[in-house]
Length: 406
Image 1 (cartoon, rainbow, N blue to C red):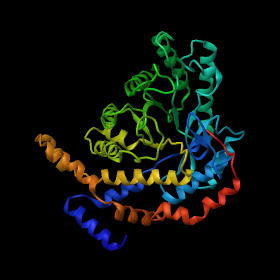
Image 2: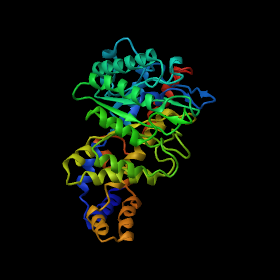
Image 3: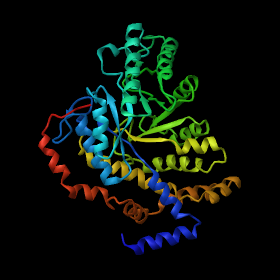
Image 4: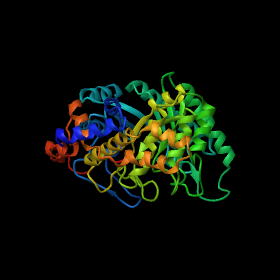
């Protein structure tokens, strides 16, 4: 894209009253964490599809994440999953990340793979299993300290398949007891982000089925507990931007696991389906940054943006790059909404003008803006093209097949 295209874009935004320099600064401040497990082999319930060149250990996962950051400039942290990323020396893992220009991000406990968790982890009727699950949560707090992570990201597969299988209220109480023990072990500058999912793998009920249950639990635990919204974890037609706005107003929106879905938790590249939904979510966050309530604005500024995807048929690293640039593009569009025009239309109950103010930002081609921002950040103007030309994809093929799987 030539300077001429950017000059025209700049003039358009000036005429609309948009401070383009402020937009650029917010784009440069955006960070999106990649998941270590997204670089490993993964599959469906029926088959794990092995790819050549996937990482064989956590250290190679970090190297791949670092390559994504090199291409995008906004993905400087990588989340780890325990025990998938368990190592003997976490200090060494932390240093390896630093040596490659990234850092360890959120620590994710695993409470769904052990045979002991067949009937639940922190909600299991057996106190010995609940104790084991709680000890793993505490282990992850210790690991977070070792790698200098401030975020613990929690998702539970706990649930049931049949009516009468378990006591809902007892399970609710057991979950709170276990998480309270973990909460009390957190350092003052740590946060636990509580994720929810309305179904799968359990089909009759899930112990944390929706944002309200996660919010209620976070409220009861205390200010270091917040809600994590996974964009794939909702029933069809759920208004996710409404959920986001509600949590922002309650100062409890902790973070996102971005992916895309056609039906349920499909773990697809962000914005592969319904990109407008992601745009509307981001627009709510941008709007909250202008809120006169400092608590709401502060919450909007302190959200952890993370990807959570397991790419089954597409190559791992390019899929990560595509997801990050898609979010970046939609975030840029959300920053172009004229909030004065929007607020005036809302106050006058001018439905069409309000909808137009939202849609106008989405319909801009932000390619010239993103090219300039990336150039100023010193990263490739076209990240995916630069990755393909880097030769890294061919270089890692020497790893062969049979790498780490999630």
